[in-house]
Image 1 (cartoon, rainbow, N blue to C red):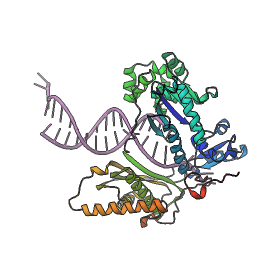
Image 2 (cartoon, chains in turn brown, orange, blue):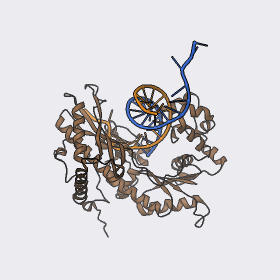
Image 3 (cartoon, rainbow, N blue to C red):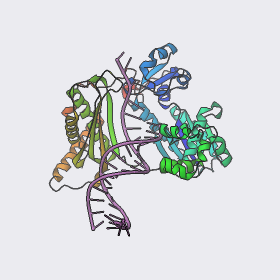
Image 4 (tube, helix red, strand yellow):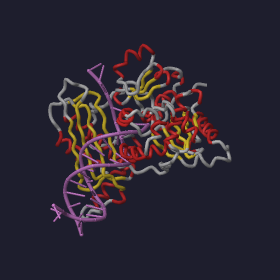
Length: 422
DNA sequence: TCTGGGGTCCTAGGACCC
DNA sequence: TCTGGGGTCCTAGGACCC
């Protein structure tokens, strides 16, 4: 049996975990630049605040309802996520961290504690809550896809207490009946349109479609979905996370800019960040892509989208080299006179560092670069991110994003620790 | 005024190999 | 009339996920 453990309103729950005065109050967490709503407490959902809604459109409404907004604090959410996983790992042998707020588990093999997987899931739910303060819902089923269905049901109906199990053909049928296909794992907007156009509304109906039709119209992924819904597992737990195939750092500017200096400085920081992430994974990149664009929502502005990929002469994770090529790529797509909104850097064509092709004439340089980056990463881990940086990263940070409602880093910064009163 | 960021997988088609 | 067979690698585009 598979279980999927999903943190309820994760970002909102993280904010609440250290601030009990927020209990029972509507709270939302905003995307970078305080742009859109990306997490809502149940109270905020009840007020009709939609996921992805631009914050400025509902600012007055939120104020009138007493909604407390937060800027996103990924340092906090990342650390809380690790704590949740640690609690889960203390109770199961096999688990797969699927996203920052979700974890698949293998629920077999705990018969010594209880013959009922549902019972064991309840114990996990209680422990996560007690250890981290984060409420979770757990769906249990013979396939991952059905576990996701079960999880959704667990969340939707308060009577289930955040737990739902599907464990027989009859229960599968009952769970899929009336389940909106739009909520199925693997069905996005395009497929919803396609399926609804042919009268397929709920998951039960979808599960009865022919394999041939699904394979033809929805590729093998659709076919796997179909089989999984019928109780035939196609996906296993992925116990070892795959090495990343690409990494991206991109952010909107706090304010639109026409300045090449400002954009260059931002890009240098994003390229340096890609370098740091590459070294952390032990990977090196063969390709570097830079993109740059204006704000599509501003119809009064001229629009521009530029993108350029450079094949690096040799695969690397050396920050100064990545920054230099990123700036070179920017030079190739830069157009003067536009109001720019966002720049980004993507490294791809990744390979493990140990598979690196040796260079006949630059092995010594490679060793020096390695040592320099090791020292840079070590110094920055002691004294703070980007304390030591390449000059192009600058200090002005005119491009930095807006974060007006940022909460403290309760669990990762000494100065932000909360004080408990006796 | 104001609208997120970071990924994965699959397919088709073109260029190329022997 | 009629034009081989069996591959690989790369890229772009489209779908999806959180």
